[in-house]
Length: 249
Length: 304
Image (cartoon, one colour):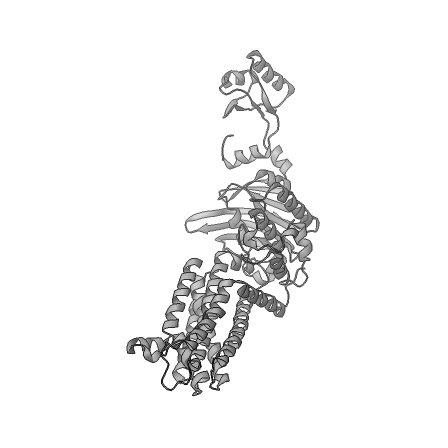
């Protein structure tokens, strides 16, 4: 009788395939690595953007913010676009006829995102240090914030991928990326935004993650409580909304 | 009635899309070591039937069993034992053919050898080519390989030869015959008569969601009753010829005629004599139905 591979082997096979596909797509390398590194290098060397008062070097503010941007790129934009096209091309439908069960597929996608994030963080930390970043030291808090934010962003990406046509997901994910970048406090501080917009921005996962990472890796003052609450709320709401609305075909 | 020990059993299946009835009380079954073709025109309900058996689609009525299990409720238990070839798509566009086959192989505890399988479907040379750069026929062959890599006991192939060139069709026929010889049960759909006759041990002709005939290609052909088909110039006097032969003669169009008489030597002599008297040429005289004739008569696609 034909038998399925063990769950561990299923997970290893599929997550390796997901990572390979991410690294093979030129546009995803551009999105996940080249753009964040480019922004970090450019705005560190060309000091045209405002920084919060008391910042010693631009890299001190930019490095945590760009790490937040990189997390959003991978977990929301990259995942959303790839999954949208997999749905459109019938890949998800076909996989459903194999022993690769949906929870294992989702776990594989999660592992692949975390693996790509490890690469992103390693590169950005290296570039940031080279640009004179003196990191604040709350790595455990930073890790917790990144994991929470990853879950929330992935939920948003899958929400789009599971409900919209792939081309619409592509446009929507890129549009949302730009909006959340501008409202995210990632390359310039939220304090520069008008009051009403700032309140909205702080309630978004992008603003909360950059607040968290600025606290954990920039100023070293730690993650503000409000950021934890916002990140946790998105980490619950977005995946639930995606699970409820997701159409596999 | 489903056969005892059938690998695939469908009994009174009903599938609806809103108000439209796609499958209307269909009953078929197939056993291990057998290739059954669901043959019917587009929209006959073939894919809907297969998608119920694959666990994709809910049924509005009837019973279905695959290897004795319910395809929807027991999906997780069935998935490792069933091979599926979708009508189109289903593969990562950027992934090379060899890589996707190796990935699918890793989903099973005891898979077929991906390299050997790729060779069997004639794609060994294309192992490094991404799915989206394969031709339509090559994509079909890779889909077939993906359906087989887990050594399934039951295989569902939805239009396996659609868009495949003649050489590819020969490869696919060889692979399907190999599956049958290895004891698998194969259920495939096609709207091509020749493919059904070449690939399948038994054919179930489906139209408007209903089974209209079932049997081996030979028995379907033999079921057609007795008549004589011939071609002659258009517009001959069918009434006069019918009187001579002692049975109705119908004009099937384009110079094709059907005489509802037993194909005895005497009837053929009378026919050829009648044409000879009028100096009319005779072409394509047949005393047996072809599968095409049976199909067209049963599905009402055209003609008699």
